[in-house]
Amino acid sequence: MIERPASVVKELLENSLDASATSISISIRQAGRQRIEVADNGFGIPPAELPVAVSRHATSKLVSADELFRISTLGFRGEALASIGSVSRMTITSRASGEQAGSRLVVEGGKVGALQPVGAPQGTHVVVEQLFQNVPARLKFLKQDITERRAIDGLVTRYALAYPRVDIRFDAEGTTALQTAGDGDRRAILAGIQGVELAHQLLEIEAADEGMSLAGYVSPTSVTRSNRREITFFVNGRWVQDIALTTALLQAYHTLLMVGRYPLATLFLDLPPSELDVNVHPAKAEVRFRQPDRVFSFVQRAVKRSMLAYAPIPSMRPALWSSRTEADVAPPGAASREEAEVAAATRSSAGQVAGTATTMVSRTATLPQIPLLRLVGQVGAMYLVAEGPDGLYLIDQHAAHERVLFEKLMKDRELHEVASQDLLTPVVVEMRPDQVDAVELQLSVLASLGFIVERFGAQAFQIRSMPAPLAGRDPEAVLRVLIDEFEEDESPLRAVTEARVAARICKRLAVRAGQALSVEEQRALLGDLEACASPRTCPHGRPTMIHLSVELLERQFGRRGAR
Image (cartoon, rainbow, N blue to C red; front, side):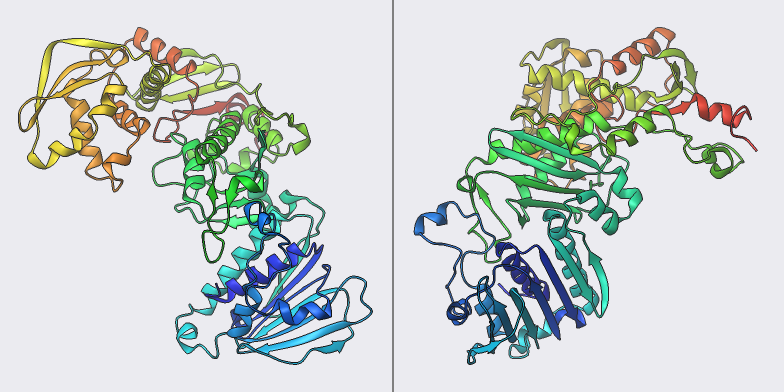
C-alpha cells in the first residue's frame, strides 16, 4: 500500500475526507521523505479507539459485513495507518467531537507507544517522519525529490477538484503550493491550478442517466496534450485509473483530434455503491463495474454531446498572413461571432443545464454546425473558397471529402442499411505472405461496411462489391490501405474498430490535394459537408475549414481597429 510519499498523503487525505472534515492542511518536507503532516477538523478518534485504529484490519468505517457490497467511504480495510506506522515514525494526535481533551499516540517501526492525554482542537493531526528508514530497499528505489514532489502535487490538486467544498491547504518546503476556498467553485480551483486562460476554455459537463451522473471539465479540440497524463477520473469520490473510462473519453473525441493528441479531462462519475467493486487493487486505484458497457456508453455519450455542441471553427490569426502584428490589428474583445458564442458557453454555469435523468448536456444546441455557404471557387486545386453570413471560409477539399465519405459509411452501418454495389469485373489483389493475415482479420469488418472481399488463392483476395458511397473509387486501394496503414500501427489488428478502418479507407479514397474539381463537384462537396454531423474536422482530427470573419477583414483593410 505504501510505495512512496504520495501513498502516505493519499491515505491520510482520504481518512480526513471520510471524517467529514471541512478544512485539511497538508505539509511536506524533502518531498515527503523527511516529514509529512496532515491535519483536519473532522470528527476525530475517541481515546479508547486510537490504539485500535493503528492495528491491522481494524476500521470504524464498516458496521456490518453487508456494507462490503455497498462501500461508500474511501477507506474500509483498516490497513493504512498500520502500514504507515510500520515504515516510519508516526505521531497521531486527535480529539473526538464531544471530548474535553485529546489523545496522542506514537508508532515507530510498527511498535505502538503509550497513549498520552493532550490538549488539542477537534479533529486529527498526523505527523509521519523518517519514511522508509527501516526499509532501506524501499528507500533506495524512491525517485528524485522533484519526481516525488510532482506525484504529491498531482494527488492533492486532483482531490481539491473532487472536493471543492473542502478547504485544502498544501505547503511544500515551507511554501504554499495550493490553497482552496472550500466554496464549491471548481472552475476557480482550476484557474489556480492551470491558469485563468485555460480554465475559461475548458468545457463543463453535467449529465445524468438512470442513477448515474457525470460532472467535470474537458478540453475543447484546440487544447490537447501529447500524452494521457492529464486525464483524471473520480468514481464516487475516489481517484481511479480505469482503462475503460479513459477509452470511453477518447472515443468521444474520435475523429475530432489529430492522431497522437489527447484531451485534458477531470471527470467525476457517481453511481450507486452496489454497482461497483472497489476492492480489486491494494491501493484501491482500480474499480470493477457491475454493468461496464452501460457505464462506458454513458460517459462516451455525455462527452460527445458536449464536444459537438462546443466545437468551434478555427479562425485565421492576422499575424499568419499580414506584416502587422496581432496586437496592432486585433484589440482585446474583437472576436468573431463563433468565438464569442463558444466563450460565453464555456463560462455558463451548471445551473443552465436541464437536470433531467435522461437529458445530456446540450446548453448550446442552437449553435449551428456550420452556416449555409455560397461557393466562390477553388484555390490552388486544394482549397474551396466559400462565403458565409459572417465572412469567408477556406475549406480543405481532401479533409472535407474524407469527412463526407466517412459519415456516409458510418451512417449506413449504424442504420444497418449498408448498400453494396457489385463490380462489373471483380478485382483480384495479390499480397505478400506476411500481409495476408492482416487482411484476413479485417474481412468481417469490411463486410459490415459494405465490402464483399473473398480469399482467392494462397496470397490473393478478390473484391466483388463496394459500398455505394464509394462507387467509382479504386477497389484495390481499399486493401492496400489496410496494409500500408496498419503495418505502422502498434494496435493489435483484432482490436481495430470499424470506425478506424473506415477512416483510413476514406483517407485513401478521398479527392486529393491538387485535383481540380468542376464547379458542380465543388458545390456538391460543399453541400455534403454542410449535411455532416461533425463537419469541422476530418475523421483523423484535422480541421476541414478556417474562418475569416468580416471584422478581421475590415481590420486588415484599415476600416476598423487599425492604427
